[in-house]
Amino acid sequence: MRNLCVLSLLWGTLAWAQAKPAAAHKPDDGHNLSPSASSVAPDAAVLTIKGFCTPPAPAPTSTQACETIVTRAEFEKLVDAIQPTMDEQSKRHFAQAYPEFLIMAREAQQRGLDKTPRFEERVNFARLQILSQELTRQIQEQAAEVPDKDIQDYYQKNVRDFETVNLERIVVPLRGEKDTASAEAMTKFAETLHARAAAGEDFVRLQKEAYDAVGIGGNSEPNPVLRDMRRRSLPLTQASVFDLKLGEISTVISDTTGHYIYKMDSKGMVPLETAKKEIWNMLRRQRTQKMIESIQQPFTTDVNHAYFGTGEGGDKD
Image (cartoon, rainbow, N blue to C red; front, top):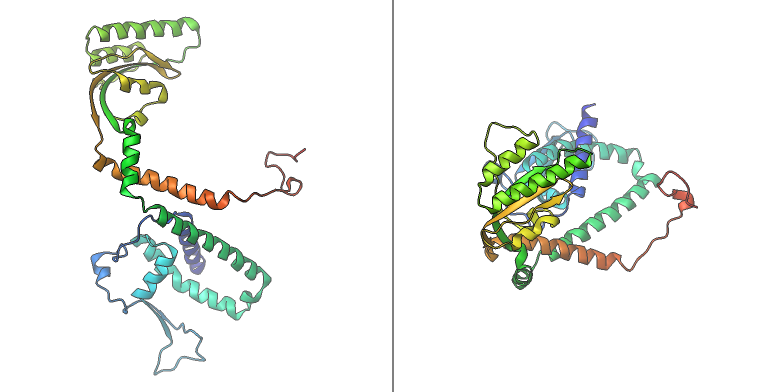
C-alpha cells in the first residue's frame, strides 16, 4: 500500500509538471533551495538507495554493499528536465517517490513488461507529449524575448489603457422587483440622487440613502471612493466616466445590476517603468499564441462522427 501511495504521488507530480506552462525565464542557480540545501556539494549524495544496484548484483557481499547513489547534480538535472521551477515541497515529494519508481521499473523490466505492445504504444505517445511540451517551452522562451521598443510602442499606442483616475461613485442596487412601478420608482430615485450630487451634496450621505432605500444596512459609513482605477477596472458600459472632466458628474448609468453615478476627482497615468512588466507579460502571451498558431494553422482534421459521435448526446445527421 505504501508503494502505491508513493507512486501515485510521483505520477501526480509528473502530471502537474506537464500541465504547468514552462517558465518564461530560466531558473536561478539556487534551484529554489534553502541556504542549507544550497551548501550541499554537487557531487554529494542526496539519495542513497540501499540494496538497489544497476545492473542488479548477483548477491550483496559483506565487503561492498549494493546501493545506488543519486548526487545533487544528478537530482537537479532530473528536476530541470521535468519542471525547472519545482518548489521545495514538490522536490521532497519527488525525492520520496523516485527510489520507489526505480525499484518498480526494474521489476517491470525483469518481468518483460517493457517488451509488450502496450508498453511500446505508451512510450510512443509519451514521446509525442514530451516533444510537444519541449516545443512549447522553447516557444515560450523565444516569446519572452520582447524588445524594449515593442514595449514602448505598445505603451504609446495604448496610452488610454494606462490612465488612472480617482472617482466617487453612488450605487443604487436593483432590488429585484418584477413590477414596472417599482423599477420606475428606483429609476426616479436614482435621478433624484444625481441631481443632488450635481448640486454638490456629499457622496457618502447619498450612498447611505441609496442603501437605506433598498434595505442594505450596516454599522459603518459607506465608502464611495474608488482610487487608481483603470478602464479595465470598470464594465465597458461604464468606461465613459474616464472621459469626465475634473469635478464633473456623470449621467445616471443603468444596467441589469443597478444605477450608477460617478464624480471625477483626479486623473493620472501609470508610468512606463511601472507598466513594463504588465506589457511584457501581455506581449509574451500574444507572441506565444501567434507562434503556436503559425505552426498549427496549416493543418486541419476531419473527425468521423459516426465513430466518435457529436458529443451532444446523439449521432450526427
